[in-house]
Image (cartoon, rainbow, N blue to C red; front, top):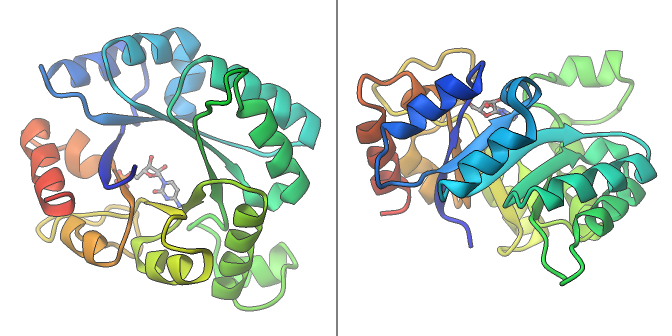
Length: 232
Ligand code: C5P
């Protein structure tokens, strides 16, 4: 488990996404489907990508009352995705119910990952707008502990936080880390970035890479470079 490159397929439609994946021919990268593509193309597209042999991280970040999240997770689990996620801010009970909903009759389930604080939330916004006190790094660590207490598999975080999360929650607790760029890339809108090589050193379990692969002149070569640098 872990040590893989997940390609963030942030595309507006199924056609664009499938045309992108066609470039990979025999290769089957782990694919992240986010809200944009899922709301545009839905469950049929998830099935089509799965049938092509890809593993899928369905990144919908659920957050609602426990019963609603449990019911929704049951539907996502039926789509046979490999990983999905929720906002840890929904609380431990919500996360526990989510896990129940996700678990299939035979006991198997997709990995369930918690989002602690969004990377777009600053210290100031968290303290003054959301009225959550304290240092944002302490809040992230506390939420990660809640995710672990609820029995989930890991958190989405920056590669720069992976080591600390593993120290607090154990080495088996997964860190799924966006914010990855090659040394020669633009950072785009990501504030704190790390190379695939550095993410490996910093103990990330999965790196989530979007534009450095999707916008590359040769996406397959960029993907293979990521795999080589991160997985070895
Ligand atoms: O193109 P880029 O490599 O920046 O894509 C990163 C992906 O990871 C995007 O799909 C983005 O929504 C997602 N993500 C992120 N930061 C988070 C959570 C998710 O960049 N904290």
